[in-house]
Amino acid sequence: MVCHGGTRFWDFEFHALAVPQLSVGKHGAFLDSGRASVKSQTADRFRFRTPPLRSVVLTGRWGHNGVFENLDDVIAHHYNLVPALLKAQQSQPQPSGHAGRLLGEDVLL
Image 1: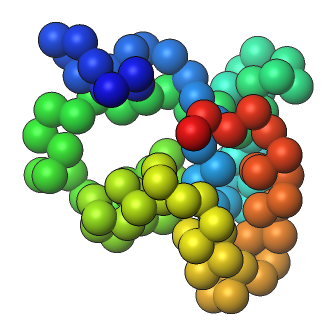
Image 2: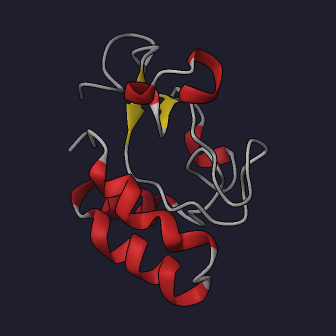
């Protein structure tokens, strides 16, 4: 409710949610540092803007990088970050090597 509350269903803010970094990153191999790549501030690493929830079931692949294939996985990740990070590490060890860095940030729980 914090990030997706209000009449527009989003807060226009940037948050770190420890979304696995898989095969993404126009700013570096398998690493998208989020808002930090724009503002060059360490505090903004891995923070991404909250997307609106209007018509969310009609869009495809979720997470800033499309790592989640269905909404159930997105919701489960919000409740427990570890399973998605572990699954990513097992399926793609090289890009998911950033899991520790993601958990080290100020993750919104």
